[in-house]
Image (tube, rainbow, N blue to C red):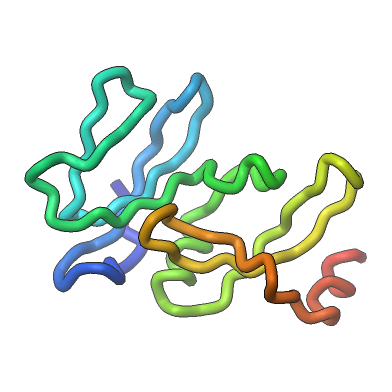
Length: 127
């Protein structure tokens, strides 16, 4: 397990990641060292009763918006309080677009749909 930073939700937790296979696809899961998860079938995971933190981000959390995976660099930046912009893809309009993401206690991360990414960033990445 490779460490990416300190847990934002507990005092002494360290966030690290490991590779998992979920629904037959490889992904990463970023978890706090104070969080422990259990699974009966290897597909559905729930927090263990002895866990003291629930921090987790699934690497495939944005796949339905066209982002293949969330990388360690992006998670590290989120943990450091930096702005993180991700490239998403609309399958309906066949266009890519950029949005900010943020940590979310319930879902791990959330897309900030109402916050527009500056035009300079979009123009720079269109080249």
